[in-house]
Structure formats: structure tokens, C-alpha cells
Length: 313
Ligand code: ZN
Image 1 (cartoon, helix red, strand yellow):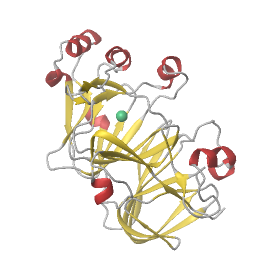
Image 2: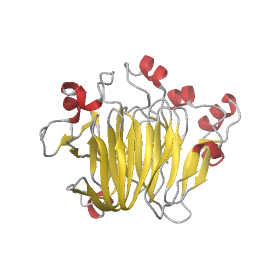
Image 3: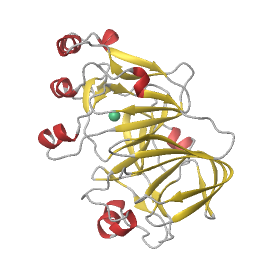
């Protein structure tokens, strides 16, 4: 099957959202509180729509159910991954996700959430919350119950092009001014530990303190094991950023022309910088598409950076 599947994203309004998804990406969405662009998503809270081609207008969840051959016939009743761009005009809440085991029991059979972030843009001297400083479960509980947030959270300095893996059980938060491409398991289960005492419509958002304490890993994984600096390429290349049980993620740099062999069950592709073409189709920052099973060689031209992902085998 030699047909690319272009997708129309779904957007979310969030207390911490902004206008960059409209202003910088040209997405057709209005509002000053647009937090997330769900570029490749087949979730009940957001389902991308195919744009053009044989499956024009079909939801990704339906395409996945009815044309599993496009996805290499993989098992599983839900499309496994979800790709988002996040515009944090303000700090996101400090949160943690459960793993499959905990979510399956406590969240109605839902999947857990393992995720990773590619930093598309961040302010100078930006820091993200990744991990915490509690040495034991007792210390974790007292820090949280006593609200000792400054000593509890661990902040890591970041720069454009950094890559961060967030395992379930990792305390994390995206901070003001960061624009991030997130690759994650197809799940929306989040436990909020702390929300800076903000109010939405006069009320604080719900916290999930007990669930958070249940699932937070103690001690946290080391900072070095959580963050890496991706290669800044002057020539074309495909670098593997991570491969784990849930996903394999590539950074594809195109400077001129580049061939990439699509030999996976499917390949999610998002353009995070620049513009160019893929087998003659124009693509640019903000384009999201799926390259189906059996596609073979992809001819990329232009000056651009793509983040691509597939399931691990
Ligand atoms: Zn998260």
C-alpha cells in the first residue's frame, strides 16, 4: 500500500494553554488557552480524522479497527500510541502516571502511560520537573502532605532538542514557555499531585494525592538516565532516540534529500521544524501523518526535522 495517511488534529483548551498552536503552526483553532494538539490520536477524548486519499473523513480509531492491514496486522483493540504537541503558556500541574498494571486494576482496564518528550522550543535557562528528591516512601508522604514542594520536586535544565523519557511513576511537569512533541501510550490517565494552588472557575482542580503516592517510584530514576541531548545534524540522518516495550522513536533530520525505509507495522511522522516534501507531498512544521505497513522507501526532500515513532517488536 503506497498511500500516505494525513491526519487532521484535535485540540484541547487548558488553563495553562496559549496561542502558539494557532500563531506558529497555522492550525485552524481559535482561543488563547489552546494547550494541546493531538496530531495522531485514536482516543475517546480525541480522535484524529484522515484528510484526503482513500479514507478521507474517517476517524483514526475506525481506520485502525477496519483496516488493520495498514498497521501491519498488529494485535490490540486500541491504536497503541498518541502523538501530541503541547504549548505550555503557563506551568502544567505536577503529575504522575500509573503503569498498565495499576491502571488496569484502578482505572477500569485503561492502559498506563509511558511518555517521552522532544523539546521543540524552550526559553533560555528553562527547567522541567522530572523526578523528586525523596529518599524513602515515608519521606515522600511527608513532603507531599506537608506541601514541601521546593524540596520535593527535582528540576532539570533543558535546551532545544533535548529528549526526556518519563516512565510511569515519574513525577513530572512541563513548565512555562516550553513547546514539546510528546510520544506516549494511548492513555489519558493522570494523577495530579500539586497544581500551584490555581483556581479554575473559582475552584482548585481535583488532586489525586493518594493515587500519586501509590504509584510514584522511590527513589526517582537518576537525572542522567532521564534526559539526553539529541544530535544536531548538518547532514541528513535518522537517529533512534529511544526503544522500550512501548515505542521506538526516531529523530529524522533532512538536509537536502534522504531515504528512510518504512519496514515497521506503521510509522507515525510529525514535522517539528522546517518544511519539504515526502514522495512529492508537501509537508511542513505541524504536519502529522502515518506511513502504513509495507510502504517501503520514503523519499524526503527539504530542510526539516521529523519525529517518527512506531511500536516495539
Ligand atoms: Zn505526563
